[in-house]
Length: 210
Ligand code: 13P
Image (cartoon, rainbow, N blue to C red; front, side, top):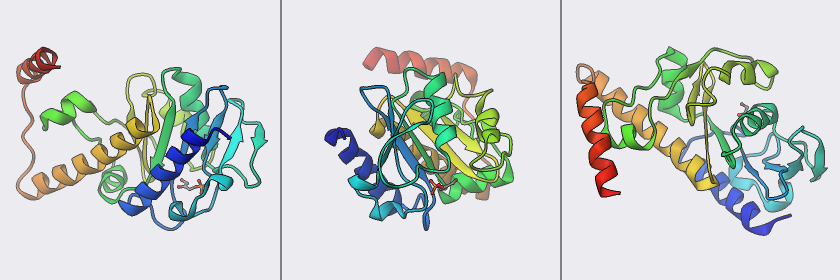
C-alpha cells in the first residue's frame, strides 16, 4: 500500500470528522494511486477511527485488489468521477450541515457573492435526487461532472473532487463555509450578488497578482 497517499487519506478522514462534516459512519473519501487503482475508505466506519489497514484498493472498474474490509457503498460514485475526469486524483463525500441543508431545500450555491468563491470554486450546482449507493447517483452527476468540482446531492450531501486529497478536501471546507455565509446573509434579508462586470474585473485582478 503506498504509505504517503494512505497516510494523507487518513489525515483527511480525521479532519472531516473533526470539522463535523460527517456524523456516525457517514462520508467516504478516495484517492487515485500511481498504478491507476483507487484507494477508498471502507463502508460503515466512523472517519475518526479509520486506519491505514482499513483502506480498500480497487481497480478503476471496481474490482477488489487489497484490503479486508468492504469498500464504501458510494464507490460507484467515486469511480464515475475518476472515469470522467482524468485530472482528478481525489474525491470527498460528506454531509456538512449547512451545505446539506441547502441540498435538502434544493437551493444550489451561487458563487457570485464572495470573491474568493468566484476564484476558488465557482458555482456549486444541485444534482437531482438519487438513491444513495446506487448507479442513480452517478447518473445525477452526469450534467455537472465535467465543469464543476463541487456538487450538492439533493437531500443527501456534497461531493467535491480535485487534483489532490487536500485540494478535494479544501473544496469541501469552502462549500460548507460558503453555505454558512449564505445562510447568514439570507437571515439578514438576502445575499446581494456581484455583477458580471465585477466578476470579470475580479478575474482580471486575480490573474495580474498570481
Ligand atoms: P459508506 O459508509 O458506505 O461509505 O457510506 C456512507 C455515506 O455517507 C453514504 O452516503
